Amino acid sequence: MSVDLATVKRVARLARIAVTEDEANRMVGELNGILGFVEQLSEVDVSGVEPMTSVTPMIMRERTDAVTDGDKAADIVANAPLTDRNFFLVPKVVE
Image 1 (cartoon, rainbow, N blue to C red):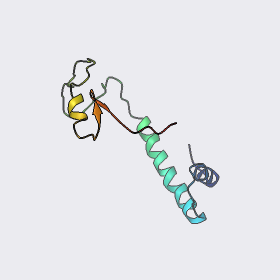
Image 2 (cartoon, rainbow, N blue to C red):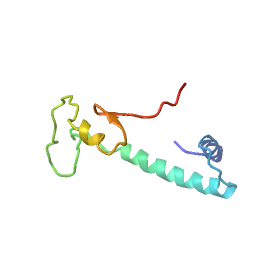
Image 3 (cartoon, one colour):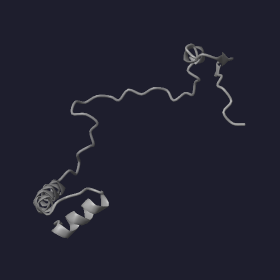
């Protein structure tokens, strides 16, 4: 796949990026270089290679998926000017 000047201008317009004619011409070469590198990567045989989460082998730490209230309601409203039973009290704004 290669990118031409019209494609660069169209993508710039869609992204709402202002590019001059010189910048668009320069981007054609840069984008074609990037796409060429990506095409080279697709040629690499990765069959039998397991996906990695890190470059060093490690076991992902997991936590139990339990719903709790955090038991911090009193701490959360401690600095509020007005509270009632761990709820914030605010002035009425709608008539």
